[in-house]
Image (tube, rainbow, N blue to C red):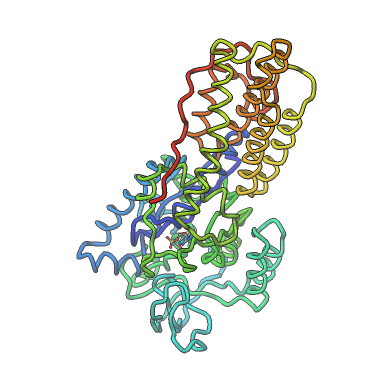
Length: 510
Ligand code: MSP
């Protein structure tokens, strides 16, 4: 395994919302991109099923936690299939494989003498499943994320010696490559510089969790349990699943992609737990921003959730993907606005890319007997140069996980190709018999640019991309890698072009 990417393991307290769809789509696009480059990819997603939040949700519904988790885990899995998410593993933290690995991991940490019994007192947010820093300073004592009252807890818990790893974690978070984007890194560097405090890793009075092996009345703290899901997912399908087998099959993860609210767990607590167990920390943590509605984080507790499945059934998954990937820069917050969504989809996908394909293939069919032109030039020309620059920039952006910039790069190429066509006016030139060769070269180049645009769309909008490529006729490039296909000039001349069908219908405002 040489590239492991993970989504967070989603709490099953509710159905997936647009925030979870957002995270998963970004991972999917990166996983597809890496596969196209020829990497051996393992894309992990799954669900976080234990803890007080889930236990309470089940209780309120009047069902057992197990029944509730079974139902919601399958909703998540089905949902990711419906969104065309190309995950390789779906880990449930209630699975026997996972439970075994949590136990093995705990023994390693204990051997390092990093576990002790202590008193845990403080204000707890059940929504975050986290003790809050200094909430006594807050007059309202509400969680700023969930806007719910905090609960006072005072228990004897097992603690993990996080403070022992101050130096290792400082070095790690100061490494420029570890946390992206930069603003997120600064928050964590600042947090770590104040001094790390040990944290509790078990709970008493909570049945719905994995039992701590040597402490019958303790269950593991849901975060200690869930983070290990990234490791148990690796050997999930092995007959001999174990911590060792997961580790030898590819740990550490290349990227944990998460929202900014859970950055501390991933970039501080988790690496320290791993180091304590003698394992490597993940290579990179990318913290994305929040999708907001009216400037507030979307979430069930806040009652402002936008149901992603309504959007999907109205518009299809790929139009939503385009908006989320192209319009929001990874790391910044993004507001979902219906009107802007319709405008972006219409302008970018229908008017710019769809129309470019449609009108060029129609002209070629009309003037050249339903085929691509029978002439092309090897000389360097405007579109060829533009294509080279686009591909170079696009790859560089994607390699740095700037998916919005990569998407805009290919979109700008489509805009410029449309402008080129308008400037050249082949529809006027075609009336002059002496200019026929010139027209052939123009049309060939525009069709070729469209092929490159279609290919560049593959990790971003896989179905839209293959619809574009199919409309350019049968092109046998089976023996070439995706990167090789991006080379200019591979569209065959005099090749049959199918009758153009609109690849997208324009959306109407409602
Ligand atoms: N269960 C933990 C993660 C454990 S990982 C070992 C959890 N689950 S969650 O379901 O609450 O959140 C999952 C992810 O969704 C987080 O990365 C969170 O940031 C993200 N989002 C939740 N609401 C969001 C938005 N409104 N916008 C974008 N992403 C948001 O935390």
